[in-house]
Length: 401
Image (cartoon, rainbow, N blue to C red; front, side, top):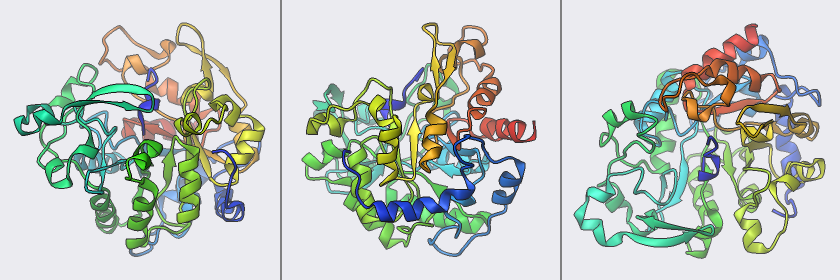
């Protein structure tokens, strides 16, 4: 998931018929306008989903997932450098239902790799590679000037000489132990890993990749959606029941994917006063606040199956960072058949609402179970978390409480 999710931390819908057909699969995941979530029976039923051979999915589509669904955000990024096979593997070991593998950005020679952002100075050891010193540059990415090293200036072979490092060492000093251990994975490697893990574990492994900055990359001649679709088709994972959920902060990217594949699709939503970058580029004046109105949600439901809102769109915050009011977003989205997978739950104090913080250390854990309980109570269908094990325990508390 993108930089938009660092909260403390399209226009006209297309393919409505196809979207409606896929949304019908979500009946078991959403219990109507009341916004209630499935209880223990739903979780227990989904937990035993059988593997349906090869890459053709779990057979039941999204309805086969436990609710609330625990999504490993960039893997188990609370414990390992994000978007590495070490992080992805640990997320599964800790009980994640779905692994966000990964944020997809292209290389110079057109391969898709998994990085939080195209700028890799903060997530790899590229600065230590003297042979790439001259690649450091300044670019404008979605209106923001950034200086560093960018994936689109490297071939895949060059990127494979780099190693991943912890992105937020101040909050996660223990994760720096693993700096340099893992390379940058490609999306194709992730698809093969998914099949391997599905066979080894005897249950379907799900992934939740995101197209990153698709408008920016399309202008560079590196369109993401066609590359994603080509790989999904190659591995037989482009079906409505395939265990691959696709997401993007740009609604037009999801509309484009809706024409290319039948996978479940999710529109990510940042703060209410922001505009998706594709809207900025096309002159569409709407903000996220417009997209989360009943009208905006109906439009999204014409080409997508879910939304991934920032948690602040589910429960607003006071000026001091504490929780304020539960919005109507969950009920409004459920009314039009959309699931909600908000982001991002993290264990450390700085990322929690103020009432759930303990002490003042930036890397100390707060009362994250209390925070999970508050968000689960709104009726969300799942949540992205850097700490899948915490999420699994919080879900058990919630469904058994």
